Image (tube, rainbow, N blue to C red; front, side, top):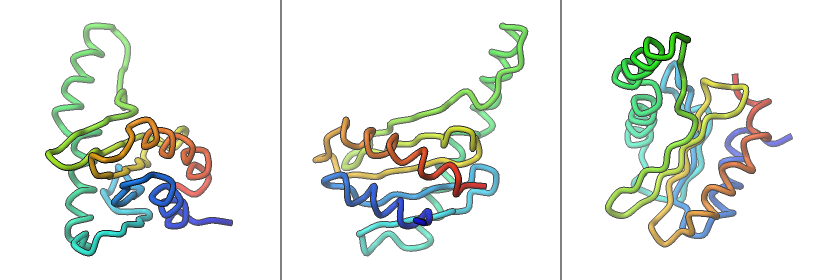
Length: 135
């Protein structure tokens, strides 16, 4: 049976121009698994990217918006963000919550040479494989 690191490696290998993939615990910010092919992706760098992903998905400003929406709708709304695509000067970042594991986030980073559809396809195909492996 594959582990989280193996599945991250599959994702990186499936997407041309992929640089790295990780699964992040959104409660702790810890990396549950990671695979990359970039020498400067040090542990410190990976930890910082994981913390930034947590902030984008569950940060205090996101929670404030969810609270506002809850008040307007009259229903409790939390963990509303399910996917994010972010573009930097040189990279694409694909982020998706693992279904039924709302505290696990897959992050794929590619160069801008990558095909966006292929990035999303690889991430979404991996989600059912990752779900039983995530806490």
